Length: 342
Image 1: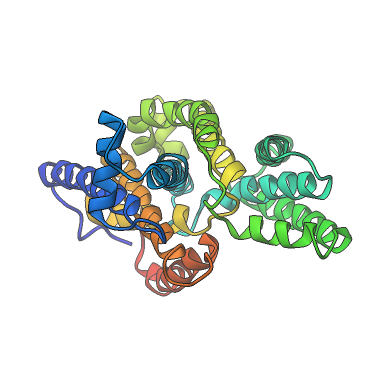
Image 2: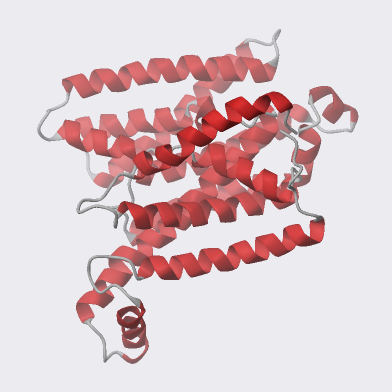
C-alpha cells in the first residue's frame, strides 16, 4: 500500500515528539483509572506523600506504586516492543500482513508457559520457560531454513514458521486436554489470552535487559533496514551482507517478543496493525518508522489496558480487546492490499 499519507521529514519528527508527549499523558491518565482512588486529586496526594511522607491515603499509595505503576510501565514496554518487532518483520519480509508471530516465537513461548503451568512450577519458572520456548521455536525455524538452501530464504522461513506453529499448537492442545480442568486449565486459558493483571515491579525489571538488548540491533541497523526493503539482490549490490543483517534483525525482534510474551501472555495484533499505521503516518523510512511504531504501540496498549480494567466488573483479557480492533483492520488490509505496498 502506498504511503500517500506519509508526513514530510520535519513533520515526521514533530509527530514523534507529539507521540512521546501523548504516551506520557496517557500513562498519567492510566495511573488515575481504577476501582480505588480514581481521579487526579487522590493520585496527586499520593505523589505528595511520596515526597513529604504525609498527607495522603497510604492504601492508595500502595496501589499506585505496587499495582498501577508496574502495570503502566509494562504496557509501555510491551506495546513498544511488539510494535518494534512487527515493524522489523514487515520491513524484512516486505509484507504488511507479517507479525512477530510469523516465526513461531509467540506460540513457542505459549508452549513453555503452558508446560510450566501444567507442571505447577512457580511464576518465575513459568516466565523463564515461556522465554526459552519462544527462542527455541525461532531457532528451530532458523535451522530448517539453513537446511533448505536451494529455495528462497524468506519463503522458506515463512513456511517453516507455519509448520512449527502447527506442531507447537498441537502440543498446547494436548496439554490442555491433560490439564486439571478446575485449576490448571483456567490458568492456561487466561495466560493464552494475555493480561497485565499480575505484573509486578520485578517482572518489569526482569524483562528490561532482554528488551534493551533486542532493541539495540534494530536501532543500530535502522539504515540498513531501508536497504533491505529494496530486495535481496539490490541490497547485496549496495554492499549489504543480507544474511548477517537478517540474522541480527530477526534475533533482536525475536528477543524482545519472547521477553514481553513471557510475562504478559499472548497479546496479539499489536505487531501487525501498529507498524502499518505508523508507516501510513510517517512513511517507510525505518529511521522514523521504528520510533513512531514504538510510541504508537505503547500508547495503544495503555489505552487497551485502561479499557480492560474499566469496561466490566471483571477484567477483560487484553487479547480479546486487541483482537476486536485488530481483526477488522486485518480484513481491511487484505481488501486494500491489492493496490501494492512499499
